[in-house]
Length: 212
Image (cartoon, rainbow, N blue to C red; front, side, top):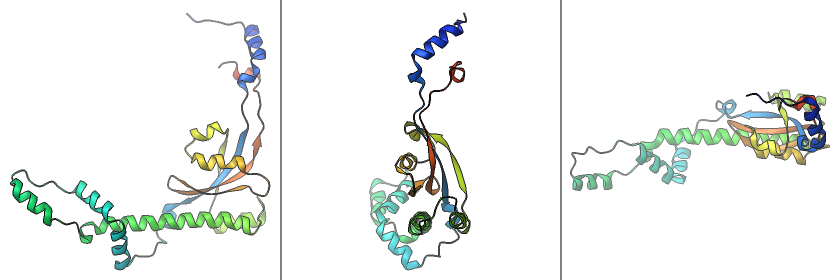
């Protein structure tokens, strides 16, 4: 059966336990996103020497992936013959060239996006650019960026968002002229948070939480 509670009793409980409903301080912010895909066409074509050096530096990983995904020998091969084939079946650069190229290009894209994000934050610092100034808007436009608003969040709530919790938590140390974070890795690229202000702790009115 449905239980009904007198509104007067609810209000009385609310007044006695107001602090339980307090919403902690929240951050207002936005961020600029440096998408890895935007740098795919900017990455120079790697030379054969670069690819071979990259293979040598990461050979164990490429060999392990190749061994894991290559077809298994037919069961009809005798144990002795299979052992001989295993010894001579050395993984070469040619066997994994495609994977080496993809990984190398992906790593270069990541470096370029990270560098662009760091350069953006550093330019704000070096040139002492104020938020929403002409210089700020020009920098956003020149870098072909856009601001993405972040729904206000508490310190605890930073762990429950899709964005990097480290990025979101960094905002609690920002204020005044330092309104921008460092560059942080996020899904698909890097981001720089732009601090906009704080919402002081508040206790919602009774009507706002009556149905909870």
